[in-house]
Amino acid sequence: MKEAGLSFTKPRAAILKLLTRDHGPYSADEIFERLPEGICDRATLFRTLKQFKENGILNSIRFDEDFARYEFNHPGHHHHHIICKVCKKVIVLDHCFVKEIDEKIELMGYKDVEHKLEFFATCPDCQHKK
Image (tube, rainbow, N blue to C red):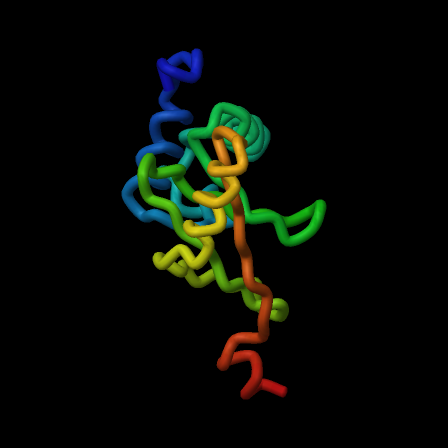
């Protein structure tokens, strides 16, 4: 938090502890339910999630304008996601399929190459519910 210029507060520390310990990704409601009771209100949680995302502490997976999941941005741990279009469950894919493309882009003279890859599909559980 110090590196991001954010002061230490009990709500920020609790949110950060939860996301580094439990990995996620979690929706804001799921984070709120997992926090110690009374540590913060929903407005503080949403404000903190926004600040953490803007400062690179968290990554977000956006489903639409009204729904996102958040996870701690572990330095050096790059991964992708499979997201169920029905239930919104997120599965982490630890293997990166496009590192070679990043390297080719760098050979073209580009710097600080980043990518984000998310797969959207219907999970096996939701397929069986139809």
